[in-house]
Length: 460
View 1 (cartoon, rainbow, N blue to C red):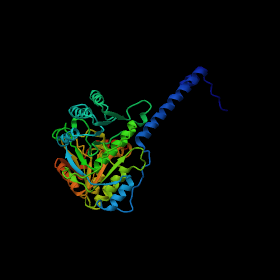
View 2 (view 1 turned 60 degrees about the horizontal axis):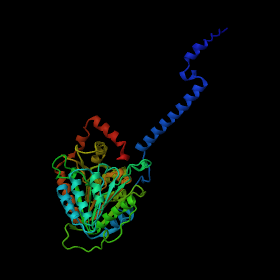
View 3 (view 1 turned 30 degrees about the vertical axis):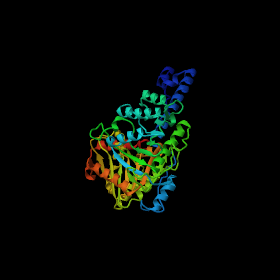
View 4 (view 1 turned 45 degrees about the horizontal axis):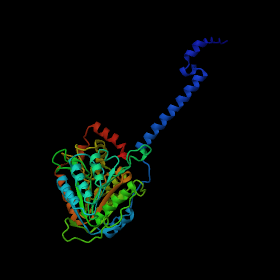
């Protein structure tokens, strides 16, 4: 017959229970209320962060394809791009590639000083310093002379813009607007930035490229403090495209629509105009509200249509799988595909590591990869088959194609393409080519940080 085990005393039984089981009813209710509340908040916050960082949202098509791949110089190529990007084809005007601050800043200041009707100035970064003082001085003087001066600043990129200098510009009659400044209640939109570059004088002369306002854009890329940068000076119809890129953002910031010949003058070719006479161009804008993602399609069709050579220079290279696949496919088809990226002097190491996570598959497919040495490479350009070039504000990353306000010029002209190609080949002399066998022997910790950086692709 089994013997019943003695029942332990109540105090002993209580000692064996979890602490929360020993609370009285009121204490239990308090514990459960606050415990559940804080636990729920913690779980919700953690899930939100994970979703924002690691999961893409939006209308990006998983696969990109086309019914044909016409050569970049063909009417079919231009018609397809114009249709898919909603960008009209423009003809005429000139374009000139200006390398580094020693070339583009004097030309820009000269054009600004000669302004008679309007100056519209839009860049992403504006920092105090010598370049800022020079430009603000000219803008303020022109405003006092009766020229309509407007400056569009980005709420994040221009956080360090000198208040005193812009106050003087306003006092002289200039107008200044900020795109999505940091405000309580609008934080969910703050990461969508205005990254466009459009500087337009009298609606007739324009500048675009990667440069903004800061002393790192001074000089000739001789030292780590002088960035390597290309800026394009255009006249005629391409300048009108830049004017439209500015006017669109300005109307968002201020509600003001720019109307009249001060901004859109009639175009008459000038026999003495400097720069390469252009055949055809497209001015392509992008916005995070555009579900059709025109820049992504522009880049993809440009890559896919390359027949002989495709040269890409970009400071922040984190393309999505479809753009990456187009580069690899063209290299596998025998196209000379080369990609020039920043080296150790980059200003964004995590982005460089995410780029490097793609080196192995690029190199294995036949793409040649180079890293610029000595200073930060900030040039944003590509050129295909010595005929078609794309220049402007956009990086080859998901942020530029899907989150930022961007603008680029696609230019179909052999003369201008020759300028872009020569600049690219000149930069290769200061670059180090990455070899597949050497790359695969890099240390394990370098591979680990690349994989970690790759997790943030959607944010770069």
